Image (cartoon, rainbow, N blue to C red):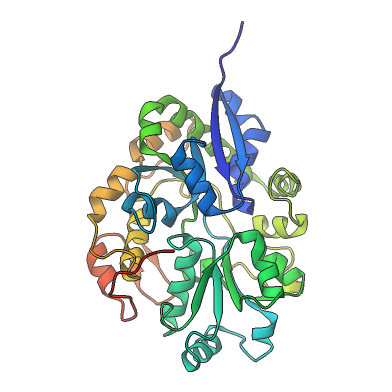
Length: 382
């Protein structure tokens, strides 16, 4: 008997947190659900976005903020989007070049003092204007009294180029995903400043995203992909041995094509701290009985508040209505319960960030307007 297998084209970036997608394909979780995940390695977030919107990809590993940037038409095309699940939490970070730390900049306070004393004399790289890494950088600097739109110069670089950019003196610091902070430290190019979990403990990071039209046209395939990826997330969190096995696979040329020890350290939240100074207060997580993967409404709302805070939106959006359209909570619930993954009853969660503010998603307009440091004028994302 011939078994029909549905191909689904999914884009990913060569980062440690592409592990759920890679392992879903490598371990055959996709075949259990009648699918074949056809993974496409991309070189930049902008390129991945354009392929997704153009239909060359059906789904993608995506920066949370990037999805909402597209939904809102910030600095590029506008398209109705869908967030199906969260792929991971924690595991990102901000690093400083050895040249900068050699001048005595050893912590966030010292960095803030230097940046305020010499506005726009230092360059920091992030991976996408509306994306996760840009917002971690801006939030951390603002918590220390630095206005990121006035006191630094920010440039966009693909993750794999950041270590070399620090080595060559092109940038003074980076905000980037794993394993690149660890690679910079292992190669003596950079020094870790902050783990992203120090900015927002157990923050959401990458999501599984698609165009809303594709999900609406292929609901069964979308549910099947979520189930396959959930199984991979559950496998990754099951044991240290599984994560080490994943690191071995991810290091290969088809996937991340980077140092196995750095990938393993980022997946485990340990490994190379003694030689690099890198410390993870909370390790990268992929499942935690589904807590990681649920498409929390409050997580989506937070990214829109930061887009408004930094002048990427001229007016407050309809926060709640937009988040409820994009976050496919009902689809996720059906997918998760079908394979025995617990689903929370609430749609919001509460978090305390580096500046001491608590975010619970209940009044996004007031939250966005509450910050002393913000960009009141609308600016275009580049």
